[in-house]
Length: 115
Length: 113
View (tube, each protein chain N blue to C red):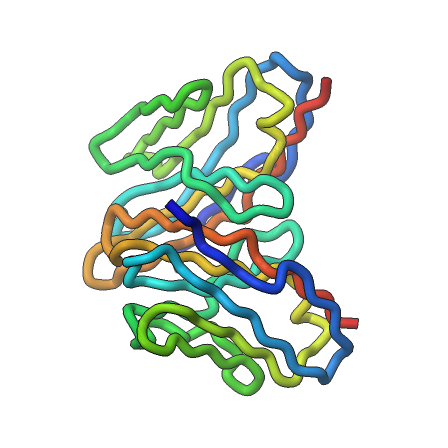
């Protein structure tokens, strides 16, 4: 079974530039998450999709971050403009369904460095 | 506020030794608790899930415990191997209508030869 695919693996940009990350979840998984993980911290939820609808984006900095999941499959996360504090690993995760026994399957992440 | 606290923050042990990682939570309501292992440069992978009625569960050399009364969980690693070097993250699921996952910051384990 193919896992969650993310690209690019690494990205280095200067502050105020824009960047986009891509995620392809496991086939058939309805729920998709984007997490931000700062070095030494646990993942922080940015946005959760159920199919192509947003379930929770309460912690997404909407003035600079945006995300979409067209057709309920692939998803992109965009940052525009980037700030130094956005340097982190951006993890995408998917699960078959939202619920009490939910198990997340994570991609390897995109490591972003903002200079 | 729902919180998950893990200790220690980091731990260094010699290969072959045992260790125990702790997770305390204040999440309510409580549905279940998962331990994830995150290798460097990789995403977290689920090791085990503990539900309200379970006290102990083993997965190979990993044994998780849960005390729902004191809201504490532990992950015990027996006969550690170099490949156990990773960050271990505790995640609590509140379930119910206000379903939410609360992540701990993780414990960074280093196993030295």
